[in-house]
Length: 397
Ligand code: GLU
Image (tube, rainbow, N blue to C red; front, side):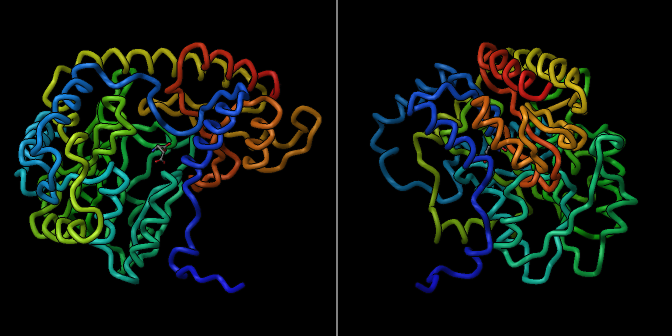
């Protein structure tokens, strides 16, 4: 039978992070004791005061009805205030468009900015959905490779080499998924300066802003290079900071004409985000940050533990990341000898073997543009973390 699906959708693959997480959850439901280091999903429950706000919202008839496409006015206002506080950026609520998670916000941004033939520079390793979203928008992704030796941080010189007359935008992520790299304020300023001087757009994914360790600091590019503001888009959401992945509330903050374009686009696709989830997000953003700090400290402890165990395995190179909740070890040396008696030559095969033989789910580096690496999220319970690390060490030793 001929394939009736459109070429543009045929050309994209399923999100490997979500696929692995779904497979781990399926196996767990079937009674298999799987430990998932897969999707970056906090293991904490959403804070009670946030859940309570959602319960209260359920009882208000206004919340049962359509609301403005770009988000509840109070939420857009709170996001503008929060962005001034956390990113150091003065923005108006009209620039904020609330979408169905950071992923949807990003997808809208690419759709609104990218013309067929435009190039978008994305430093690698990169998050799995950027390439597919750029492709769906008709653009071409141009990757710039970084390595553990350079701290997985790209330089303006490397970016300049990748720039062509077709370059429309740079995707900048710090703290980074999957490497956990955090750029210093000076490095951020230098990249921002380069972007401002060359006239390209910068799409800043700030979803891991609060998850930094060892004195590393989060820096928002347009906050330190102000003349970049007319060509910057900031994307963020409540998922990682407040343990709210399932609530699906993210946003973009763009110059007014781009925000208006995203609003038009969203008005014909999803309309607004569920009002109940928006009310929960509003309470999260306006509320105290002490639980966020407690979660951050827990991730920090787990980060050091996961690094300690992996760095001790022969032929596995595991840099200590400074942000997000991922480690991204290089397993290329380890692939040169059999794993548990089996010859595996790629990180995809290694992850399949670890799932089959040790019931641990890791994400292979291929989807992040870094074959020979694996990503582990350490946003899982301490017990699971220990159990999973023991299993990994046993198989890989
Ligand atoms: N962003 C998270 C991750 O990289 C969640 C899954 C996804 O949307 O990719 O694991």
